[in-house]
View (cartoon, rainbow, N blue to C red):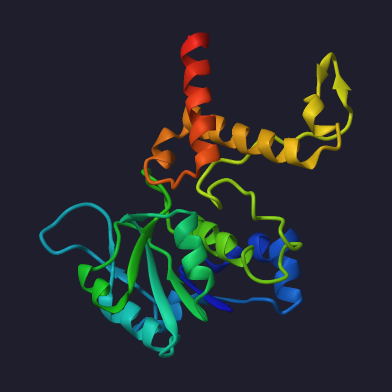
Length: 243
């Protein structure tokens, strides 16, 4: 897979691309990432990329002709073009999985007061990473790229993300490691008894419980099997009793 990022601030991506799992993925040629400076497509000697908005108002708007030139110079018939934007559909794990199967993605980082609206004629999708506003789309682009890269084959050890929060539609169950007893707070006995079926049931129950208590909205479209339905009824009863 190849990910291209169109930005006004290339330097922001240096630590992102040269650290930890992302760096290894690039060095091992599991993914290719190219960061492109939008200013190189400017039409004047001062490399301006923005102008004042028609109709008045504060701030500057990035010009459509420059963005169109940059897009045309960096895509093929296989490229999915994304624009980071507060107006976009909220990003989630389902979208990350979908994008991880693309051959090539171009992410355009929003900035200033935004883009000339006509830029939307040349992008496939607007994406927001949450209901808040950032100074620019660079952080959003890193979030999107990171979530896609970690899903590529051999980037993580096999099976390591299968139980991640949102991967199955539920939040992840609690995890523990040594020491077994920390200041009187012990690891649940079920996790040390060696019974794999009991461990599976415990983890499923805890995933359902955490999701029900913290993100019940995730359960609205979740497809429960019979075992999970019984567990959820038990969780609801316990919650009522504890309250």
